[in-house]
Length: 344
Image: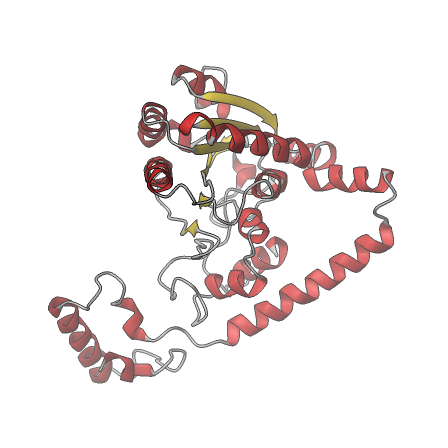
């Protein structure tokens, strides 16, 4: 999916995309240790978390193309996925805002579970990069979680770069793990390119987060961002191409898992080719279907802010309809469900 959608952006078929190359082990390994009732706050390189929690290719493509099947009704930029259940909050662009939100959500779960002892125990899992850990929100969130004993697991993907800034220029301390210790939080550093190690770390962290009435845990997963930061970035402007190629060869989480499976007699070249071919066909089919789908009704731009559309918003809808009717040649409404009728 990452390969196809990156190229689609280069072709101008969608506006933006971010790939997860080199960090797949962190997303899939950690999500495999969660339950459907656990709550997730992700950043923007967690496609594997969504996939592991039931997000389908149709869900991905609908969001990327902002069509009528998108859970967010076409209101967000690409790669900002979200779903109601398993509860995975919609990704937002501002860096680190999800970290204090996760601490607050964990505190809410703690209160709810105390009021309802029959409720299955739940945690919040919060994902972010080491660049986001430079934001003030990170420190506020860890302090809140520690002092309120919130059942939350903070998972930091330390992939070596915050956009174009390498870790050497981000901090002088011992990574992100040392910060958790400073806040009195159980902390572990794990090889993020080992999917089994990440799974075990998250499994243990989840158990600890639920113990003693709730407590936060910080995981620092060490990895390397093989890809550009996004389709808006050219990473070879600030790092050597040979460095990236070296990481691809020697520490790719997918290659490591494949070699392990082959050594166990569970995988081979034929299975590899068959799986890749079938997945590529599935991705291209959903890609084509999503690209042809209608956009959500224009009315959806005004809904869901308040329970009832306010008088002010109704006036804005009328004004939008007037403009569209006055300048029909300037706005192509054919891609939208209901066209201009939805504004009535």
